[in-house]
Length: 291
Image (cartoon, rainbow, N blue to C red):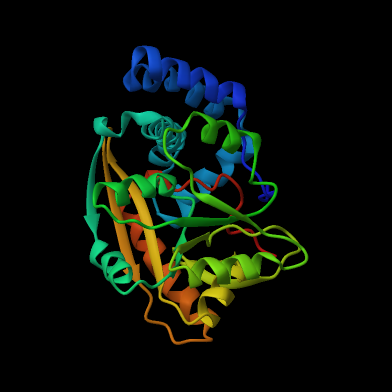
């Protein structure tokens, strides 16, 4: 089975095609083209198919027939979130509605002029979170901690067509200088966001239980979150319908210097999200592989 290699599939050319249809024919036309893209993935991406089928069949307990059907729908839903992200970033946010659950947690942080560590996942569409904040006049600066491999040409292209300043990127470096950037951002009362559900082979990890099976998680986000004297908030932006999104924010209650405690709370919150939004799990590799 395939393991995550530190970067995601896709090409700039593919994104440009969707941007063309969004701008000149609308979001729903791009959704229509997406049927063919999802069908291609469903037919030809055998390793990804096996990984996501395992998620539906073994972790969520769906029937074999339903699991196969959900594989195609998963690709389609993933494509929708990408199209929505491009549309919203290009100035079409008025075509979408937003709902908030736990936003008072972030409002309190802003009122206290306090930075925070946000931990999200490769589910839903967290990258449009700044547009949620704009709806409520939450003047937060978001810093996304990521690897060099994930800081791709696709991200640069999306930033180039965005009408709003993009989320600031903090690249993880071997000399650990990113730690100073994280501390500086928090000192400025900014938000520092990690994704806690992917680790690269050979890097430090923690083991946690997700949907009834142990899996490996990157140690970095949970070690940093537990050691810094700032609030830790789990945040997810989930697609509820074609044009409606729902933001969830939950504050961690784990003790300081307890990374395993933060991880346990995270996996519980992540499991709850996946049970509510099963199609929005976008890790197309052998996530629960035995080591």
